[in-house]
Length: 228
Image 1 (spheres, rainbow, N blue to C red):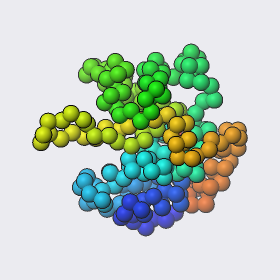
Image 2 (image 1 turned 30 degrees about the horizontal axis):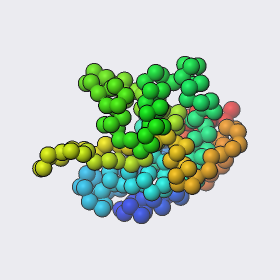
Image 3 (image 1 turned 135 degrees about the vertical axis):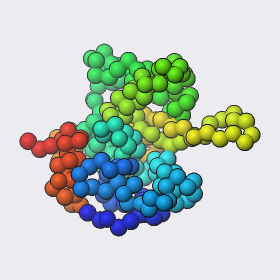
């Protein structure tokens, strides 16, 4: 596994494309993350070398899908790998059928419908428009988002600045959400039409080229695709 440091945005994009999967923070055994590859002193500086700002740009430019797909942790999945990962995590049934079968929560279903109707909606608007604006509803809102990302139903497609701030006021940018299908179509990425078994084999073959046995085992377990 390459462990050369990543300093620029371009280098980060190239590394994601070369290894396929890159967690934002340490996630898999014996496997790098964006935080482990980049200089600690570059984070949260709000400049071109700040890896925290690269997250949204990577997703916005279609270099990789970004979301909390595994263990509720943020992960970049290259445009080459994402069709396989999407096939493994997503359900072939419609969102309505999944909800009726009890596979996703009421909160997740409600959020998905809104995201589908307003692709690229920012998190603040999504929370407000789905009735989760109250402080006591924040946990339910977050659970719904994690549920959808864990099923690769939605991705974090970028960030949006808060509008209507008084002069001199600042606020954290809000994550923007998009259905995975819409994000893929927008960036010219075709869905994988094969079976989940075929997707698993293709993914594992690629990962074996640069991941240690321990790393491969950790990734496979996290994605629920360990060979039997």
